[in-house]
Length: 113
Image 1 (cartoon, one colour):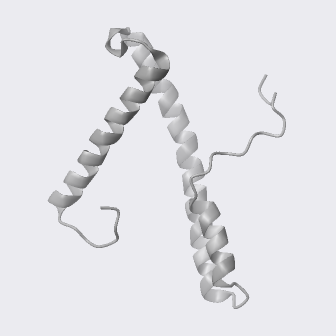
Image 2 (image 1 turned 135 degrees about the horizontal axis):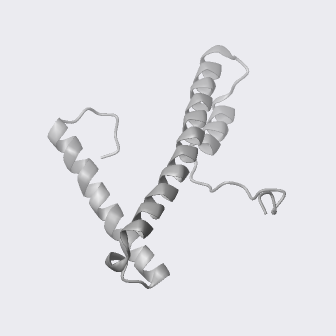
């Protein structure tokens, strides 16, 4: 759905879980092609390590997402209060903040070597 219009809890749940299902199947297929492994054959400790790694990643992603949300709210405040802020300027900033671009390469490639 991806809209701001209120929906019923049932419609919301169907949207969430049908999207998760489709995303999950696509991710599984992609991983299967990349790794060419029988995923269910791994040991429990391997799964635990993968979950641990994903949890660590998710903390960093959440940190940066919260920072981006603060920036978006700051932009909204600037749009209300700064007469010099044009819609073009605001849309350029918002497009960058909400965009789907990956992180920029680190200037020092060997930062953690």
